Structure formats: structure tokens, C-alpha cells
Image 1 (cartoon, rainbow, N blue to C red):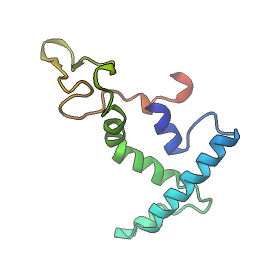
Image 2: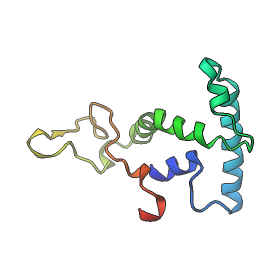
Image 3: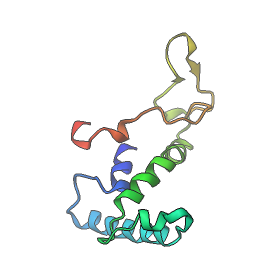
Image 4: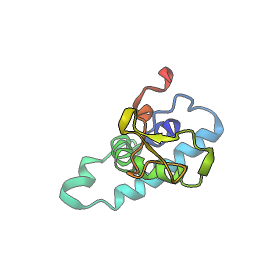
Length: 118
């Protein structure tokens, strides 16, 4: 999950091989389209990036959508998901849906820990 966040935000440490270069170019095209669709209150100007990387837009997109990405990843995990409870201590509840807390909150912030420290 954290590596996906790094890739989306353009912070992956292993950029340089051919497959990741293609992925990065594709992400740049995707975020160029998102940028082109922005129109409210100067958003397009705010996220303008002369180099075409759209790092600020990518960072904000990840922040806004990380829970949905987590939900999509864990949705079909069923019983193989590693987290049996939501929370800790006496307030902990079982995750009867097998894969996530009923609040659909991402249980980690590792995606914000620098990659070299994970």
C-alpha cells in the first residue's frame, strides 16, 4: 500500500528501470488529464507544473483517495487479511467483514513514512 502511494506521488526510490519509466510516463498523462479538468477557484493554476510531473496534484490526490485505494486493495482479501481487529485494548472490535474495519479507515500511515525507513 505504501509503495503504491510512493509511486502515485512520484516518490518511488527505484525509478530508473524501463518498467517504472513507462509507469511514470503513464501517471504523468493521467494527472495531466486530471489537471486539465480542474476549474474551481484557481485550482488549475495552483497545480500547474511546467515540467509535467504534477507532484503537488499527485500528493493531494493521494491524500484525498488513499482510503478508497486501501478499500479497493483489501476488498477481496477475505480471511487472508492480516488484521483481525479494529483498534486496540478494551475498545477493539472484530472485523467481521474479514478485511477492514467497519469505519473503512486505513489502519496505517506507513504510506507517509519515507521509503528508505520502511
